[in-house]
Image (cartoon, rainbow, N blue to C red):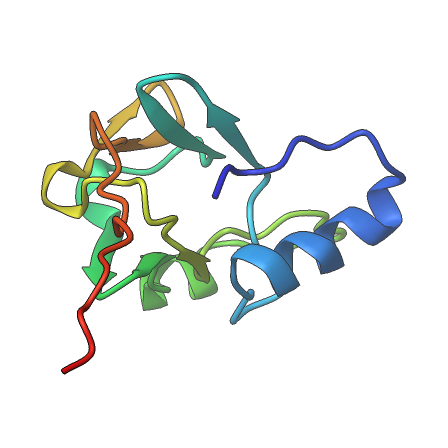
Length: 135
């Protein structure tokens, strides 16, 4: 299964991605890219102004969960006149395709971009057809 590229209207794309790859738990999901190369899938979140320890990246079975929990300090710090983004808390779940080597997933946070690398297995093990003799 390959991740899909997008050339359709943005209004429908998020619903399609949520149905196909996973769902948003909170509405304040930062923008993200999904890149498919020969060697890996790469998910990039645009989340400037945080530390790498602010994020949680977990894999359970074939599910990847990326989250950032809210801190009480950020809630009380500012009085906003208008607020168009809020990444103080988010959670996004992705279904991991079969061709990903789950044991080698890793992430890096650098210059406001959280990158999650999902290396592909070199050769996807296919179920070969085997004839079974009827006795």
